[in-house]
Image 1: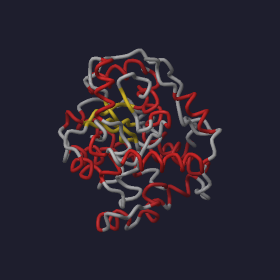
Image 2: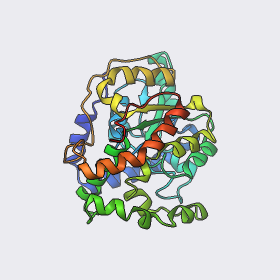
Image 3: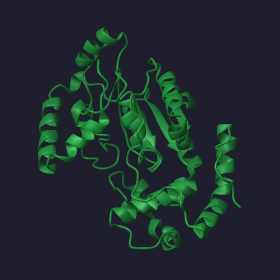
Image 4: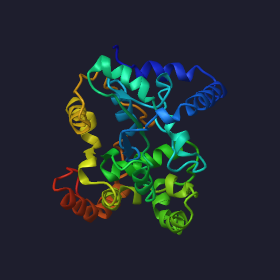
Amino acid sequence: MSPFDPLATTALKTRIPRWALRTADLSFRMMAATTAGDRKGPDFLIVGTKRGGTTSMFNYLIQHPGLLGTYPRPRAKKSTQFFFADRSHSSRWYRSNFHSETYRRTMRRRLGYRPLGFEASPYYIWDPRIALQAHLFCSDLKAIVLLRDPTRRAWSHYQERVQNGVEPLTFAQGLDVEDDRLGGEIERMMSDPGYHSTAHDWYSYRSRGEYLAQIQNWHSVFPRQQLLVLRSEDLYTRTQEIMDEVCTFLNIPAFVLPAKTPFNATWRTKDDVPDAEADLLRSHFCPHNEALEDYLGRSMGWPPAS
């Protein structure tokens, strides 16, 4: 079987009008929903972190002959956003986004093992309600999280918001007002299962890099062996080794990655964090990173506070 080519698929999608993609999605969902009983859903999730390589990881993994993203495969849609964007969707609708067991049995005869389905969303690790929702859907789910140096992650997150036209403030100003922007949002989210907080998603530059509570939240409902924690930096510097580690975690054969091009990079360089903000953030994150390292039992290797 020839490897799936995410670069070619992405290039093709840019030439198709959005209305045509939406129409095709609706048609496929309606058709797939009629066979939802034959669709188990995902076997694992890539859950984040934002600006940590989730898109790259997704596109690397769909090149594996035994890994299936969302249905239909040529659409190469990274996420259904089922657990947060629109809670009106049923589990039947969710299962319609993944390949049928009939199709997987056909592939199994060719591969010699059952192919696995998955999706990816960096919001899944960040919204504190989602781990429990995922567990209620399937307690056997595995999950992969990529953790990036939180100072550089915050800067990259800010750049993306500017690029998307929703951040009028400077980076320093955004950090100064972050607590005000996010004030009361967690409380509203926890009291209203259907509420999606744009502020909590968009403007959580500093708080989203406080990783320990997010990892512990997933561990509160999933055993540790079902959550693989990786460094984002390793994904790009030791790409093949990380893919081998993921395959071991998923209990599928390793493969040689055909293409290692990073995906979803921002329009600016990732590393030029302004000096003043970098110093403040590294000081803020120092105790958080130490607590994370103690919990995981390993060094994350991120620059310490100066």
